[in-house]
Image (tube, rainbow, N blue to C red; front, side, top):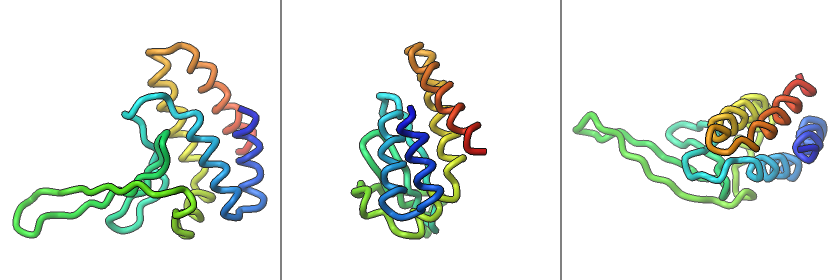
Length: 130
C-alpha cells in the first residue's frame, strides 16, 4: 500500500502525465478481482472514462432521436492514450477516486475478509493526504 501513497504524493507534487499514470496503475492493482467494479475517472460530454482492473474504458452514451432510450458504446484504451484534460481531472479528483476504490474494496470484503485490511490502508492514505 505504501506504493499507493508514494504514487499519490508524486502525482500531487509533479502532476505530469507519467506520475498520474503511475497512480492509476497502483489503483488498478487494488481493484477487487471482479468485473462488477469500475471507478469513474472523468466525464466529458457524452464520454465517461472508467478505470477497471484491466485498464481504461471509454463509455459513450447517446439518446435515441425518436425514442426515450439511451444506448451506450464502450471502447478500451491504453493508459497512455488518456486525454490530457482527463489526466488533469484525475489529478484534481484523486480523493473521489480513492473514495470509490475504498467503497468497492469494502463491498468485496463481504466475500473476502482480507480486503478489510486493504480498505483500512486506503483510508490511511486518504487521511495522510487531506
